[in-house]
Length: 222
Image (tube, rainbow, N blue to C red; front, side, top):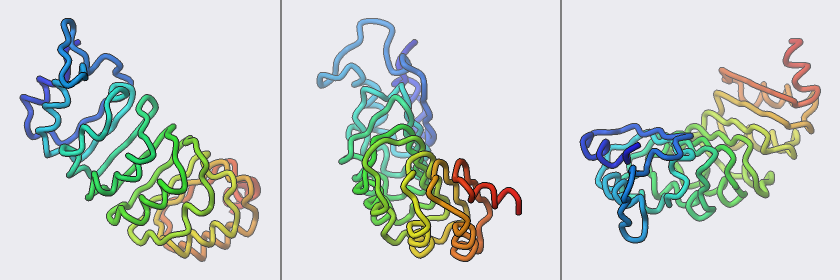
């Protein structure tokens, strides 16, 4: 399979690039030339001249590439999804608000995250409306969400906040005005969670609770 470089070269107005599970997509068939010590040099050079990208999804195909090399072409990105096979360092995740100043939606799957990462995103990504954390690893605590995020409308926390309590839920209602909330694996929530959610976010359009003990039962029954 040939490299993506010629595809990007011939489509200068490319604004959506999604590659996941394509382990050989960036490689050339043979005699791959190394540019600056990187066998993906052709691809990086072409992508670096593309300033129209607004929607990016990265999976296995991007695994060896540093996102720092893509900074120029990511300046207009509004939607980003980072999945299994691409691992972004903490300093890169923290720098996303600067790399992608117009970022509105961020989905992280199987990434190593921390309180520092989440707080930096909520505090500095002023246009961020959607934040989804799925099966992420790291030392995440309630401190992550103890900051204002007035633009945030959709929050999905799937199996990353097992420590979430009613007190943490109350803090969330005070810091963001959600239209969609999805929680999985929050086993410390109880019957009082329903009142906190209904009073804290009266304009919810979607609520998804999975394996959240009695809270799930109450929501289902009523």
